[in-house]
Length: 51
Image (cartoon, rainbow, N blue to C red; front, side, top):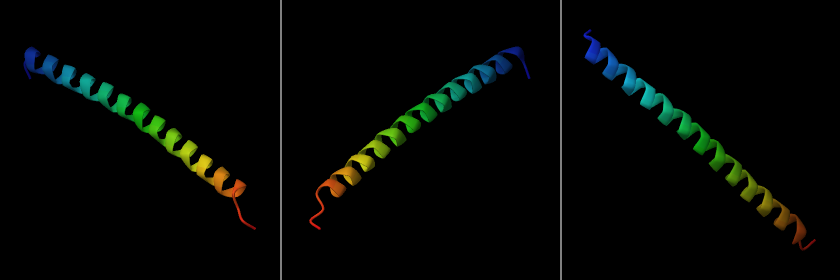
């Protein structure tokens, strides 16, 4: 490979890695948010049982 091609490939993989890491962080945040919503629904259901 030429030096230019190697540099372009390195830059591409660096950007890909940054994108994947950002996606993991976002996915973790969404998971925590959904978990909090589920907990709130469960708590509300327990508080409002009719029996």
